[in-house]
Structure formats: C-alpha cells, structure tokens
Length: 385
Image (tube, rainbow, N blue to C red; front, side, top):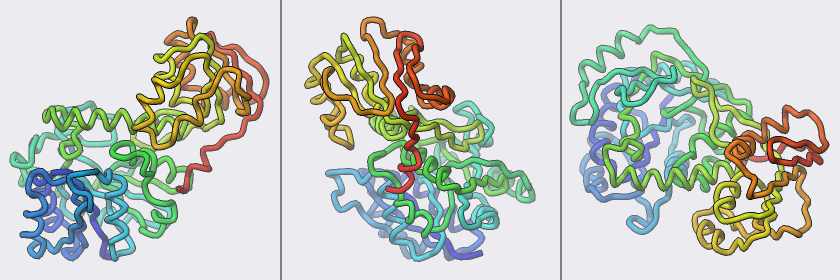
C-alpha cells in the first residue's frame, strides 16, 4: 500500500495519545506512515511528552500559535495536519482511538478516486448501537485497554468481506480531493464539522465505503468530551455542540440527518423568510437558525446581543422589521401567540415539506401560512467553501 498520513488533533489529550500513537506504530501494515499531531490546548503536558517521544514514534507535532488563548477548533486542526502532510492520502483519526492490526491496509484496499473509506469502530456498550459499529467492552479508559483481547478479536475478523455505506471517523481519502472542496468549514468550530463535510462529500458524489475488517477501538468521545464521565470537559463540549448545531442548521436549513449506517442525508435548502406577528425573544431563539431572514414586530436587540457573539455571520442582516421588504423565495407567516410545538416540528421539516409539495402557491399547514414563490434549491452551493 502507499504511505499515508494519520491526522490527529489533541485538546489536552495526553492520557489518550499515550495509547493511540503506539497502537498506530504497532498495528499499521506499514511502519513508516506519517503521524501528525496538532496540539490545540495543553493543560496536561502534551507538548512535553510529544517532544520526548517524537523520535521514538517518528511523529511530527504542531502547536496552536495562540495556545492557552484561543482554540483552533477540531476542523481547522484537521486541515492544518492535512496541509502539512507529504502523502497523497490521509486518514482522520481521533486521539481516543486505538488502531487494529492492518486497519490501514484494509481501508486502503477499498480506496479509489471520489471515495471516502472509514474504518469500523468497536466501542464499549455505553450508547445504543445503530448498526454502524460493534459494541464490545475492551476497556473504558486507555489504562484499562484489554489489548490482547482486542487484538484477538481483530484477527478473527480479518477475513470479513462485509462492507456497508456510511462514514464516521476514522476516515481516509485523497488529499487533493479534500482540499479541492476547501476542507472543513470553520463555522463548525468544535463540533458538527464532520457532519458538514460529509454532507458536502455526498453532494460532490463521493462514495462512502465502510469495510468491517478495518477496525479501531474507540473510547466513545473521551477525547472530545462527549462522554459525561468527565463533567468539566463534558460541560464545555455541550456548549460547543449547542453552538455548532445552530451553525449547522443556519447553513443547511436542517439538523444533522443520516441513515442507520451513517450515510448522510441532505434535504433541500431553500431561501425561507419567516414573518412573525406577536413575536417575542423565546420565538427568536427557537426560530432564528431555521431561516434566511426573520421579519418580526418585536425588539430584536436583546437577542442580537445574546446570540451574535457566537454566530459565524452577523445576525443583523437577517433580523428585520415586520414591515421590511420581503424578497425570499419562500415566505411563512406565523402568529406567535398561536405557534405550537407541532408548528415548530413542521418548521424543522420544512425543506422536505416544500420539496414534497412539488409546486408553487399558497398553503396552510397547521398554524403556518406558506407562500411558495420559487422552488430554487441551494444546497449544492454549499459544497465548496
């Protein structure tokens, strides 16, 4: 196989890197793959340790130039590693993963142009299995990693020819194809960066391939903080996830969607203006991410001051007065005092609803009044940054 680059962001992940990096060197089919670490934060001696072992593990590391002041975010950290790589192929890898024997080779054997190949995760049974991973407890933390048992299981699956269509880290693709798309979107600063880039890959007509003999052990979000066993890290992750989810919805007009086997689903994105009479700040909080523009009869200043600091784009351009000129392709009239949870569910599914309607015109749906003027879909304009 060709030499590839493992790209690994680290946010004070020394505890996990001490198991992750040796697993790559022990279990890769080739022992000379590049390993590049980007240190986004260091509150645990990560840089000191990497400097001590860089020759032993033949790795390269880079440090956030604003270390301790500002995070790059995981998407930009990945892109930094990809940019610094010297190989034609890279693999996105998490710090809380351990590579199974020959996982690199099994993934590489499925790689073709316009293809993204992901390994199959084995995880401790902390969360329900949607069918895209294997639930086996080989340890909850790196210090408890049951390496021999894991290796034996990986060996037992080495001849499996099972392949499914989905995508999740770790994933492998050609560097040139990734960079042609523009890499990760920086607005998904610390979360949802993967769902965004997977949507764009799907729209770019990439194939997603998941071979089940290419295996990694994943400690279920320990490095990122999605695991609630580390309360402080988990609270920071929840805040980041909330912000990134709103940014994802603002961009795509819908929340993250995928099949049970993790193939992304992209719904049509339309230019929607919400016209809200009898509005209030709670409605602004709920509805702002789901449209291109809001036309409201209340003071938007408190919401703007609250939300704009965490928004990638300046919200002043979408928060408009009730009487302002309305030029959106789709207009939805809402009376705030009559707005229900059922109406909100309709707003969240609006892309699919408009697509299924198949025609322009005026319609009533629940307490919503729709004016479909033009059915122009905009999702393909989001592929390249």
